Length: 323
Image (cartoon, rainbow, N blue to C red):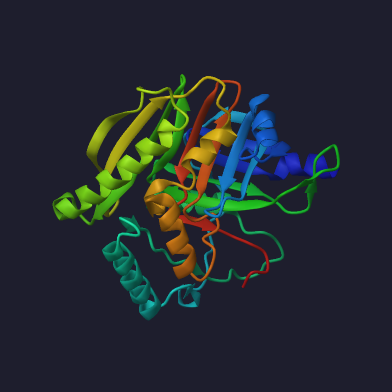
């Protein structure tokens, strides 16, 4: 079996109502050349890290499929093996720094995060992303859940190496959708155990981020078309209630994905406002890169001119030899 044939059989993906397998091309849609390649056609699964590393894999076979994958049970890490990039003292120190920056007027808000990590027991191969996808879909169903698994060591028919991928999101949050020329984003800001726990502070934070999203969309949408379709809508998920606002605009004709991502990435809700100042503060306070966490995950259907990308929160990823 050739490397290409093995790749066709091994690479799998599921997200937003479609399932796919096999990779026939790779591009970076955040660049001009990569966006042009994506626009040529096909369905591309996209994974972008919070730091801006963006890759799209064009899938060989794509089918409509709303069901989570079936497969072997997921075998996770030892519950006692988890470590954190920020311990309790470090996190509290970071919160104090954010508060000081807000007091000084440097930012209105900033989203401080930590990354959890644990080793998986080695079994001679890569872990089963579809199995974790199925486990999460059963125990914690989410509108932007799925998986992408592209095994390492594969080549395209033209000899180019294929970047590996292993990411499994269970996200409730829409980063971007594109349908019939309308670009939408639905930031979450405001979370509580129940609806009654949502406060005026949550509403204020949501409105600040909504203004940031409106500003982002204004950069790539026809002037006068950016609008708020739903303000402070309440969404309930297992164990949590969220405030969600939906912002939309009519995409400017001829706008490529490099322009869209430059205007909107990283997602507003997981960075802060003003975005550039918040990102600088996050870089100073967080000791490790976020990676796929707080990035973006989803697909671009270039033939139908549609796209669906979730914010990479509540997201797992695996890397060989990291721990």
